[in-house]
Length: 448
Image 1 (cartoon, helix red, strand yellow):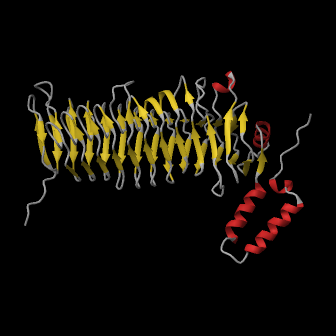
Image 2 (cartoon, rainbow, N blue to C red; image 1 turned 90 degrees about the vertical axis):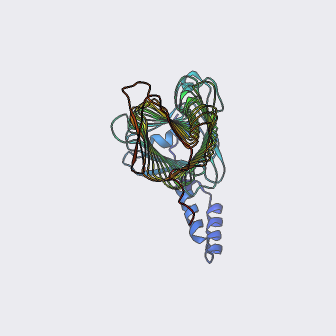
Image 3 (tube, rainbow, N blue to C red; image 1 turned 180 degrees about the vertical axis):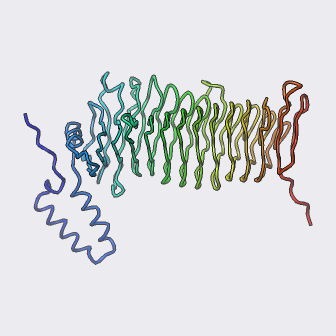
């Protein structure tokens, strides 16, 4: 049987529908809605409508391999019997249009070990169209037999694989029973741009409940996008390893995620994270599967985090390091923003650091954090050389038994020294003599 080739939506409209559409344009031509209506009708005319898996696979197979865009519109919910693969210089937009469309997968051994969508070298995929007026949803249906992500992006052949996710797109309810990246996995220089939309309620048995990034993968989160309710052993919202990078900007939020370490974010293996433009990491929760370190952020093994102005890390509980926990040569650059309202049952309400980790503070504030033991604002344990350098910003109104704003543990051996720098003042902490600072840093100016 020969399958009929897909054709643009305009060729499937009946004459009456075309006449009605033209009449509607004419009636609205005098209004300010005319431009938007024309854009919607143009999108509808250019869409390749599909209503099942076979039609979707055909529309992608027949797309040109020269980068020319093809817009595919889902007019019904679709249940996948195979992975949708985008590669070979194909440029695909997959969208709902005037009604919500849900993509699920058959519960078969083949699909349970495969991603819903795989973007490979040279492929470009956009989920959701900026003119769409309904949601596109990828739903794992909480199938406990699944062991792969909803979406995989990897530049396997060397050519860049990229995925852009627009507003009105939701990735949800996926479980990876034996892997990482419950919602999304990005590897081998793959690029993911989340320009709006939601990643929620995904689970990874290993790392990265929402997103897992490795091997120079790159993720950008913007456009008021959010990730919440994701769960993993490490990195409830996001896990970054092996030189992966993550940029969070433009009023985005990571909140209400769960993990044993790094409720919001976990970074290791020279991974890096940049936070700017009103982004927030807040109200993430740690479970007893791990050491309960880093309610908001957990860093180790040469990880780097840069926090810029108008950002916040707040409301994250932990055992140690409510806002941030870092160790093993990791570095946190605080240029602005606030770490506030985090709580711990042990040490380091705002920030906890150990094993050559460094906090370099140029601006921002660490305030209103609470530790049941020591270091309400910042706690440093068993560091060598300098661990804290404060060139600007403020640390104030934190609560702890000792060192309300800053506590630096004494070195564990006579021959070690710990150095800290506060506004060009050098302090040396020697064996048996911890540094406890309860006053506001820097001190408030005297009343005139």
